[in-house]
Amino acid sequence: MDAQREWFATTHWSVVLSAGNHVGPDAAAALEKLCRAYWYPLYFYVRRQSHTPHDAQDLTQEFFARLLERNFLESVRPEKGKFRSFLLAALKHFLANQGERARAAKRGGGVALISLDEETAENLYLQEPAASASPEAAFEKRWAITLLERAFAQVRQEYSDGGKGQVFEGLKLFLEEGTGHGEYAAVAAGLGMTPNAAAVAVHRLRQRYRELVRVEVAHTLARPEELEDEMRHLFATLAR
Image (cartoon, rainbow, N blue to C red; front, side, top):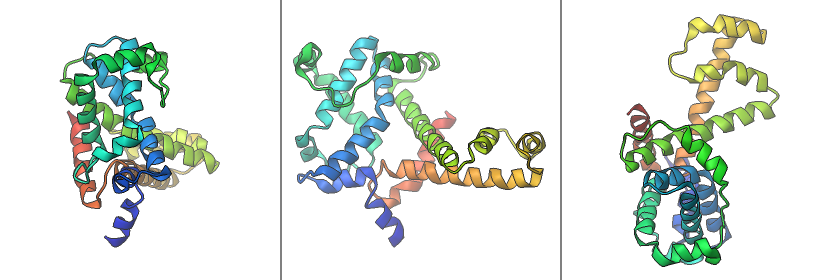
């Protein structure tokens, strides 16, 4: 547990929370990393509030501009342990009170500290299933999917950097549900492996992927005791 607590002391959100009123470059950089990682669930939520693509882009960028202002951290309290919960509450507050300031930002009064490409954002949005859940539930599911996508991209990069990109591409289907040992033979033949070697490689791939999912989730938390609960929340959200 001590080692885990030491690890949590350096997660992105814990660095932000520990900074308090004395924000420095480390906390600012940690917050910016989180915002860059999770911009799309916010854009997604704003679009589900019936805003046009252009307005959603403007509102999301203005929200980030305010979030990254130095005085923002003065309002952050340690009990706001989950970045996911804090971010959605902050976005709701912003949308309810954006008024003249947001309109001024669209006229050029704000600074886009995180630049969003409207075409990319909207292309992602148009691939989403038709709206059925509430915007809040939709945000939660998109947040969970984004976590998995980030872990998937990281493990793919690790394999590529290690000269095993072809192995990853051959085995990545085994990260999906419904795939099992019976499919190893065909994939193993394509990779020049025995089925047993493929099984070992799949085990290692799944293990590393799970580790990276946990790391990604941890970066949005402040305390180690929250991790297991947040992991359960993640998979329950994906199952809905």
